[in-house]
Image 1 (tube, rainbow, N blue to C red):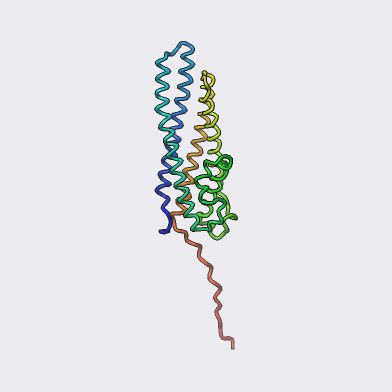
Image 2 (spheres, rainbow, N blue to C red):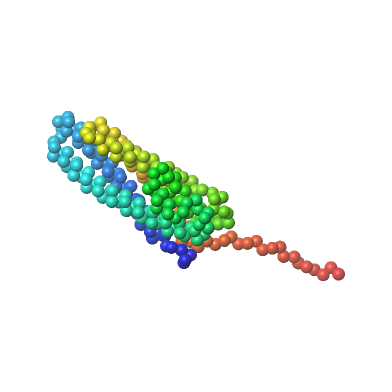
Length: 231
């Protein structure tokens, strides 16, 4: 597959960044619980303003790198997916794919369609690259259950992240709100960890499909007749 665009290296980079985002989310959840307990203790008279300022400083140190990691992971993943899509079109006709190349990028950002366009693109790239289904028309090929579970976990994580953000946009944060934010953050971290583990598997599997040359199954030779002279 020398004519293919290399995807294993960029796939490895995407996988590492996705893993780092998952770790950053765990740390962020820990700071959320710390923020809640610090504000609760302050209102109960068991903490000082200095304690709250320390929590705010640590939270800022965690939040900024986490946002940068999320941005980097998203960009690298989409670059990997774009390369994998180009390779997939060399195994199938481009018109067999349900979305054009431009949606590899736009599909993540356009409202409404970003709920299913990226999943369709990944599914089509997977099926186009799967060496076990090369003799079947693209849209007749089996979809991978792995991509479905990954996408479901990803959507749940995004939904929880929106709830979490709205809590912190409130004008006044109370201990109850911070506790709610910490609970949402905890559940989001778990779903995000699931999405990260499955997402890395998706990257690895498609990269493997496109790196290992496809060897078609051997053809069964026609029956050879032993012609004998019966005269």
